[in-house]
Length: 196
Length: 193
Image (cartoon, rainbow over all chains, first blue to last red; front, top):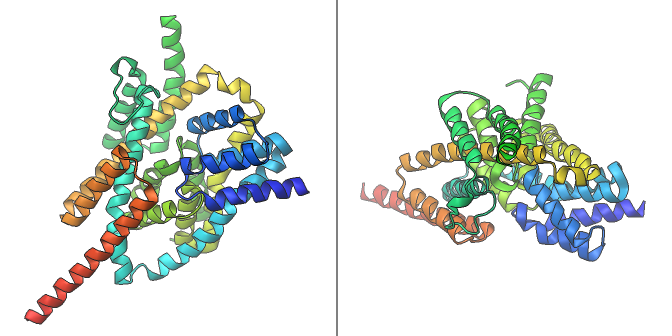
């Protein structure tokens, strides 16, 4: 039982202190999982980050599942994930209550009015980062680094086609994303075999 | 809308699918949620979605989980939040459990890597599409403060990697000051009459 509690408490702290999500959580996860408890080696931890970048879901949830699974099997995965989301559940539900109650107060409206354009900017920034990663396959080292010889033409074509479909049709975006994945599953191995 | 079984099923199915396809984590899920809940289902409006994103970003924990709690709570209170939490955490829970078991095999599988790369290109397209519409909305609003805030926040976040929490705090203060200024202007107008 104590192993489960330890796991729960460990990921509870990760959930509680990782404000901003994503990569903000990485050093915390490393401190708990690698340095403090030795549940994973540093290279295993690096692998989780890589896997998390390629697979759906938040990094914290992904590593909670992975670590829980490795040390205590499926019950461990569930316990670690629960620990990770527990702080969010309590804090965000409270914030939700206050937001939906007081959002029409004019001061709150003023503050939110300043936040909305910033959120659009943050989405744009995240989108560009993903686009650079997709188009250059991680070869780009900075926001102004465009290694044109490393360009991934399949990703460029998929991106262009997906964007046109999104703007010209009413297809479900999830279908378009899944479709891009399936086409890539055929296209990459095919070009690799033709080239090699 | 009526909160019956079919409503909860749509809510669960939508968050499950969004979570299952959100490669990259962090902010990526926000434009996808906007597309689903604002454009497609029309259950929440665009301003609410942006507020939800700001709150999700500034709270502890994963943004995807936080945003889905807010959406679930907005639509159906606590039961709604429970449904969206479940929908959001199940896909990574299932997927990573499988991957943890077949870890070595997945890592070097060319089909798996290709699938993920292709999905990444698709996700990038969805975000660019949403951003184009949203930023056009801000520009069309003709509020100079909003337009400048958007441009400055983008430059700060993308080119200078400024801490996101700090950015949100600053923009909140800007919003508050702008509110005070507008109020003063309105009072002056009132006095002039």
